[in-house]
Image (cartoon, rainbow, N blue to C red; front, side, top):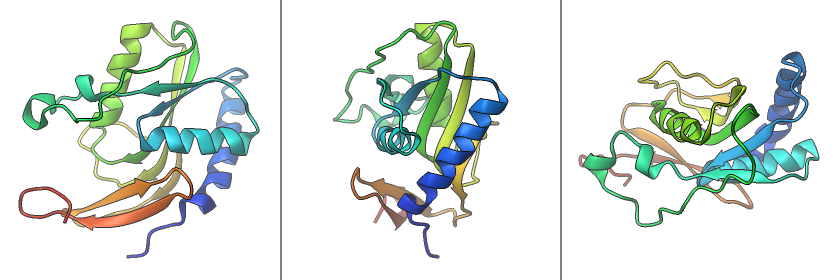
Length: 173
């Protein structure tokens, strides 16, 4: 399977996002990237959109429902939200949407900061393997992978996508 080039997906995503926000009559969205890949995608999208504004950063590690099973990732950092959440139109950006659990964790964290007016979900890739009813409003590409496959985004410049195969222990080989 060949993976799409992330740099080629970004212009189309920026156009789709602009159209989505325009249809919803959202003129001043607040952008939030989910650490780490979502932040990279968010920065690239802001650049594509010609927007120079603060970017919120979420680290959802403490909000994940598998926290007790997997433990704490050694690079956990605090979330940084340089704007109010209450009443704002948010654009939540992640790199790869798979089960939907990261997005659920992100929404839980965001609502701890306040009640947004709306949340638009943007994802570079949708792996179409959801366990929760969460779908992106804007997506770069949708892929169907084998059960033992994952996609990893490396970056931030240049972006590269790597197809990984899980070992018997559930870790990439």
